[in-house]
Amino acid sequence: MESKIAVRALGALAQGSRLEVYRLLVQAGPNGMAASEIAERLGIPTNTLSFHLKTLSHADLVHARQEGRFIYYSTNYEQMNALLGFLSENCCGGQSCAPASVPNRKRRSS
Image (cartoon, rainbow, N blue to C red; front, side, top):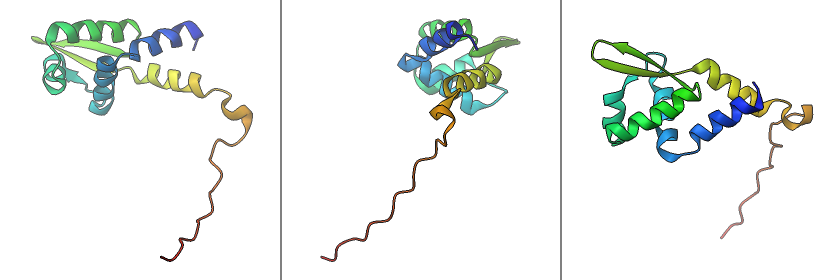
C-alpha cells in the first residue's frame, strides 16, 4: 500500500461517527448492512450518514451495492487488511512484538 492511500484511509477513519460506522460494518460481515439500519443503530441522521459513507467509500474502505430500494454497505476487507499490513510492516525492527512476560508479584498479607 502506498503512503498516500494509507493517509486517505486513516483520514477517513479519524472522525468519531465514521469510525463507529466502519466498526459496525466490520462486525456485520461481508453481507454488510442497509444504510437505513446503520442510521437507526447509531442514531445518525440519514443525510449525515450519507456524507460519512461517501468519505469511507472514497477511501475505498467500504463498498456499496443496491438491492431494490435499499443500498447496502459492507467493509472492503482487502483494503482493511492492506492498511493493517502497511501499519505493521517492519514492526519492531524484526524483533518479537510480544510483550515480555511480567512475573506475578506476591500480594502482601494484610
